[in-house]
Amino acid sequence: MPRPLPPEDEAKIEELYLDETSQTGHRFLIFGGLSVPLRYSKQLEEASLEARGARLSAVREGEDHPRELKWKDVTKGDYGPYRDVVDAYFDFAKNGNSEFHCSVVLTHVKGRAFSGARGKKGFDNEVFQHCLKMAIYHKTNLFHVYLDRRHSADEEAAAHDSKLRKKICSLLKHNDDERAYAVRRVKSRHSREVQALQITDLLLGAVAFRLNRHYGAAGANPDKRQLCEHVLRRGGVWDCFNDERGTFRPKKVGRFQIWMQRPTEAKKNPPPKKKAIPAASPEVNGAV
Image 1: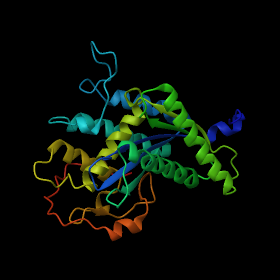
Image 2: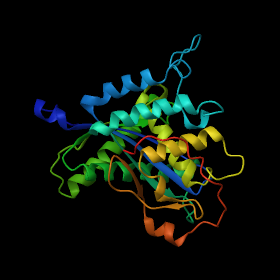
Image 3: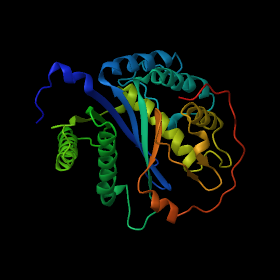
Image 4: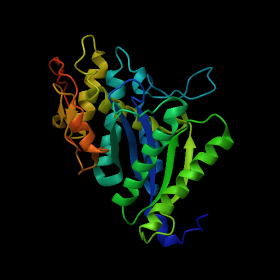
């Protein structure tokens, strides 16, 4: 187990909030989330709760659990309130207080699965690969990793989290990483209780909505189309997507990054052509 940190190392801790979307039935699986310095995480929580307003308030009368923001729940008339939450995040992030990184995985590869009993190992491996990449990307940081909880039993969740932490640290040590325990903590949490995980779900949902070609589909939810464009333009990645081919150019710089896991696979497996409908072009603030 990691030993307690000296005070001077506390400033090195980054909190990673990770989730996934489009796991079943789509061409691309998108995994990733927010990276927030520990000293700023409480500010992000407070900014998100304030931005939710009355319509999206986390407190629900007569309910045991707080209301959770999820991409799949965006319906007619929701664009404005959800835009305010997204803007609160980007305004928070533009001062260097947070980054967003996501990994895109091609699912339509023979023998690959990410759901059900057979797909558990494949999915866990993508989680590991993304965390490992983050640890390498931030070479001097230490990490607390928070995953959207996938296990109902506490013991099972704890065992999964411990195994992931040890696996990442072991591989880094094997490759002569100077940090004894780069990943100090891995903990699965219920997303309904963590604002950063809910923001992660919205940002991932926007990426998946465009990349998996839902944005240009006939009958696409207009509020999701507007929110998708708003997120991707503020993130500075709108022009990275090709709607005709259903592909994108990875963006590896800035505070909103999209990576491609095993990019050669995507080149060898192009999607069938599909005509897209014109962009909604809502009013959008400056990119991060």
